[in-house]
Length: 204
Image 1 (cartoon, rainbow, N blue to C red):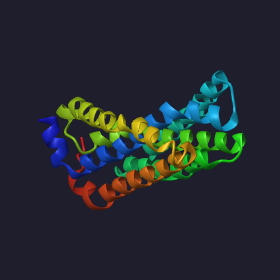
Image 2: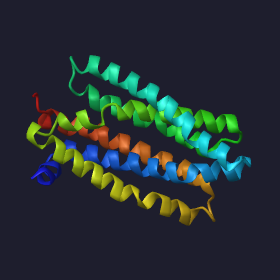
Image 3: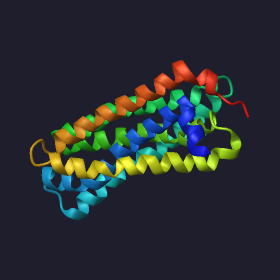
Image 4: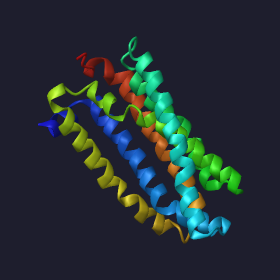
């Protein structure tokens, strides 16, 4: 029943597609960034493993606090604020995903990781509550499970695809291309906001 409702609710379906795009980028990043830093900047595996996770997650923590606080305040006046926060987070994270891949120095790459983490955190702060805005209460858990399952099923192909293009494009270009996925995910949320949210919104 939850799957049926999610598919028949355009806003929920578009939020799921946006979430899937985010997970696709994230799993690719999680899988390949240590190798990327190790090969590009000749770091030790310990240094590469630490740097690949630390800058992203520290700034993601900050982004979650900022995005959550702002959207909680803004949503009291406009329920669509939660989707808008997600849209902005994904859109602003895209340039930093590009910088992460194409940065020519460690400093630039770390700025990319930090910016990606910051604005991904802004998006993360409203992942489930945005879905709950358009799904009736009794299906909240099931709909969340379906969205998460679908996102990670599709996202699981990301490391494989990046591995396929690594010998020809290289990981720098592959990461840069992933920034486009964030833009497309932001576009899906924008479509939901402008076309479907007013009809799908549930004020519970």
